[in-house]
Image (tube, rainbow, N blue to C red; front, side):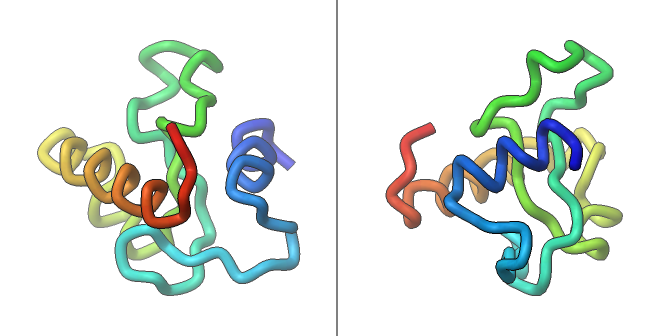
Length: 87
């Protein structure tokens, strides 16, 4: 398991067998997305505030596209606040 995936699961209290909802559409998430690309800062981007669960469709549609970065940050913050997690 990738380090950032493990961090996301632990931070959110998920087990590897749990249903993990996409933070945009709530379908089954299959990717843990770096909101700010790791290519622009290495593993220092592996933080709870920079990692969000996305389904494949939302990852393709919104991931790594500058015009959606602010929306992804807002949605991630909203989801984390709803879960009672401070990021």
